Length: 205
Ligand code: GRF
Image (cartoon, rainbow, N blue to C red):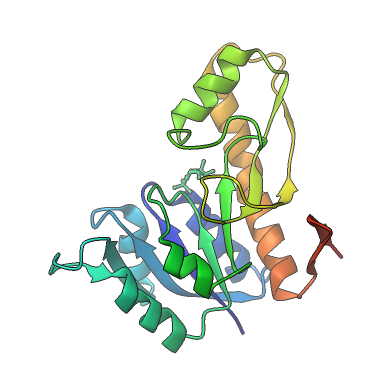
């Protein structure tokens, strides 16, 4: 089975979209671990209820209630994780983890990269910036994670017409709906080994 570790900081709707795609047989994978930096987030509750291994991570080695990234690396390797999915994870992933999982960490971003990305561009900040820019389309991007925020190669995107919106919340709603389909779609392609990098572009076979 194709094994996922899903990193989440907040609401966790993308985690639930992955889980329901698995439950309804569309996605051939298993959520083997849920990791968060926020011990009170809904995603951890969900993981505990479903008996999925879960970890609260901290960058500080001295934080006793949390697992350090170096210990997490050991856990992930014991679990034989195939793909790390950042689904609303707000912290920077340490370079050591990125090096160990080269081209095996993906992130979902709620705008059409390379626009509206980078440090500080998360949550409603993104949708407000999109709204204020007066662009006519927005949509989610799934990309590989490298050492720079929102910078890795783009794997797939979806587009929503936002020409008629009057609030940034409407953009958020339309984009989130697309995210819940796009992320399981992309993960399934990874599980089928159909993602290919060629000449700095990503192909989905
Ligand atoms: C999503 O909009 C995702 O694109 C971004 O963070 C949000 C997470 O939402 N990276 P949720 O926690 O999955 O509901």
